[in-house]
Length: 459
Ligand SMILES: Cc1ncc(COP(=O)(O)O)c(CNc2cccc(C(=O)O)c2)c1O
Image (tube, rainbow, N blue to C red):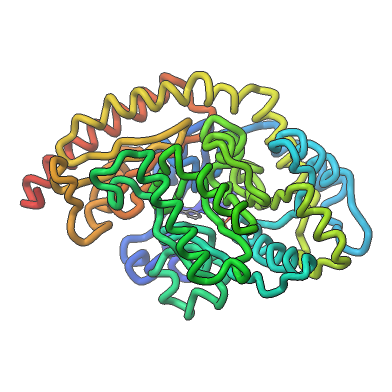
């Protein structure tokens, strides 16, 4: 039974009781929340009946689209059959076994084992503990340090936030924890001026080697990176970067970890971002597209050598009450099966992905204050710049991005501002006509944005 309340009533109750993530509560409560009440396909509706095109698939996660009838059915049946049991103490249940089997089928070769969590952050924290345990079992317990990247995002747990390179998160809570260091991100536009993509990719990878030598290879456990940095603004490394990173990790006997929470399950047109960039990690973390956000679940994939090593160490003293939760596992299974059997991932690679990338570049490259128009599959972005010719960014990084994002919002289109990067990652089921709709609305908003820049003397 749905509560029939007015938007004003919901707003008042939300302000009275609900603490939101990554939010300035006081300022939010001044304006009041936007109540999203239902969704279908790529669209959301708010409590005022406004239809919104969700260019962000929720938070990069609703890969299969909203309003599926099969997933709720699967959840209902599973909940009636076995709503919960744990996978501790030598027990398992059919839903998590079936999911594990399916994941081994869609994973790149050599990844036959998964550990379950409830989120991307928990997957990252699980990975941190696994990596350190791995080197304990290998008899190299001093190999504890993990290398991440500035402006990388790996979640909000103490481990994930430490491994991430968002300094505004580190400032809250004395992060990073010991044993986590960072190198600069492979952002060609900003750090590779005048260099070819190939040269810059190799330079950016060399920063990892420098850090390994600075820390001491005998102390470094792993390098961790998102194939494409998502929340950092869709930073797409040059093609030369990841193969070089892999070479360096192998050279110094360091585990290579891919954080596939955003890139995983079809976002780039491949099942996993590592396949887009031609590298093979030892471990990779997932969540989001695993269930398309219909249920909270994450999974850490380990290669067979890591699995064998961890097994040789006896008890791995880690796990969660809901690791492999039956309802989450059943829904994730149905979701992944549909992504595969309905050809949704294949369509991103062969059809809608190339179409989006063509239209995105045609539409935005012509704007005076837009540069570095980029994307692959159904993850794309551009950067708002003060002066294109000199590649000068705006002052007060992020302010202009929010101004631009608010114009999209006002026109019924959700895009994400990551600093002054404007990014989009729609549900993977978006059609070509709907891509045209997204682009047409966004172009209209960008014309308003550039007009406002002039009127405010900002450009
Ligand atoms: C690469 C990566 N790794 C880990 C996480 C953490 O996942 P959980 O949130 O499920 O714990 C993420 C999450 N990414 C994420 C989460 C929330 C907001 C935004 C944004 O872009 O505003 C991005 C992520 O993008």
